[in-house]
Length: 285
Length: 160
Figure 1 (spheres, rainbow over the protein chains, first blue to last red):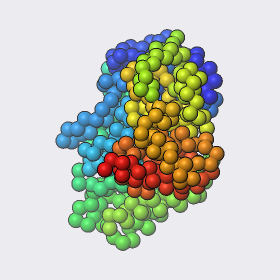
Figure 2: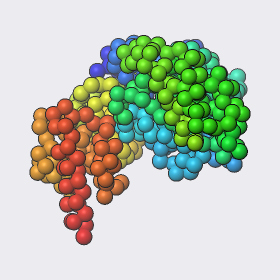
Figure 3: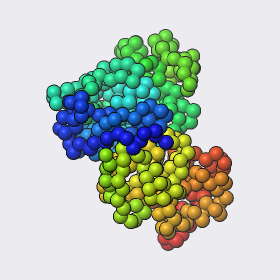
Figure 4: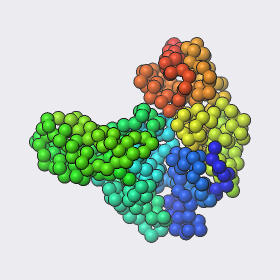
């Protein structure tokens, strides 16, 4: 049950322009909703329902996946199911496809959106690490005009983003992996439905036996989803040897600062973070 | 303020006047009297409220009914029970002994139905993935998986 579910005014703008105009004025501004899978659960859990809600469901500018040779653009209101089922995406962004395929279960994937997962800004958001390793951008819109924010600057604090109160997430601009390899893995109580204890995405390019480029991102090891820049710099240019994965695990354990919470402990997360990084690198050997 | 929506609900055109963010689950159960979809956890984790929206399982407890667009096709257990595949599934659940308390079963049958529509020859892994959003606290799942395999086989034999 959601207390006072009948009271909010829910508005359905017909396009992005109208949505931006609504959000520009504090009197017409509403809580943005896309799939609603996070918001409805929060409201059911007792978070007060807002007076005004602006629905982004099916705004034409926010839905769909567009491919150019060096960029994949995914609309913010695109569902996890659409990402999971788009065969064109699998070779380009395998970590993101794996992440979207692992959100909740089929029911949640059919409803929840990529933009909603980002806007919810939980450190345990499944798609965030996969987005981060692409080095891509978030496209935001408001009546003041569009702007882009690099993904590694988008999550600014626990449940906080760089989007201003009048801004709407339009899409994600993601460079495909090219010759680099990607991995995604999450650890939770069970594969489906359980909120993750920790997850990792990697994008690593190996050239002539050495690591030319490494992007490693984790969820649930800090207040926001994070790139592991210390590990990335440590990996840069290093030869891919048998001992590298274990050495990398030690670097990870020195540099992540997870917390204890209802799903796991800081000690376990620090240990698992090292193992997950080592496993991802071992897959390259 | 109410949002007026027109849907195909179990094959019939219906109109709903929906206040605020009233949940699809409440609209189905209370306004349309379709009590097959159950409220378990109320937060999208258990799958007891599963219904099919344009053929895909969704958690009706997490969907503001106003967000279900005009023209959408909704199928609940009451509607599935009137289809051939739905009846075969229900009988298979009975024959396999897959039902104990029954609370999760409408959602289980709907997720199974959607699976068999898109994949008539599912592996055990396909079945377990398709049903991973539906929790059952009685059966241990083995008989539910067996029921879906049995239904798939019967439907394939019928199609021959």
